[in-house]
View 1 (cartoon, rainbow, N blue to C red):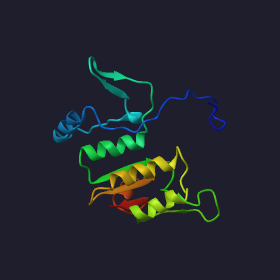
View 2: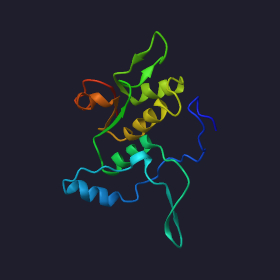
View 3: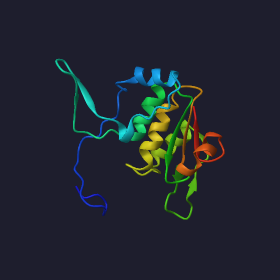
Length: 162
């Protein structure tokens, strides 16, 4: 399939992650003070089989949803999704474009319903953030890579609270 002027891509399924297979290992490492890097590129897609345990499958797991599943599994207070822009925007590409600051699930769902976010770009980031903040007391932040510390401090980015 041709990809918006970027050449050809092989099309494979893109299921949402269900769980992190090595969740307990990740938790144990965090408890031991290790900085864990996991779920790179969305992780390795596998299915459970009756006879062989786990088997790899041809698929691409969305990295934003993987981040939300990992954050949920370790009971994180915040999910930070870093990207190339300052945060989620409404009216992107128009003169009226603006970055969404502090907000809530209901407002972000309304923007999704209005098709404000591009599929395959900002939409999965917003959907993953909304999934994460379903539990009370959590916040999800979408911000630029260069402003990670300020975003965690609540100073920049799109901050979605539960």
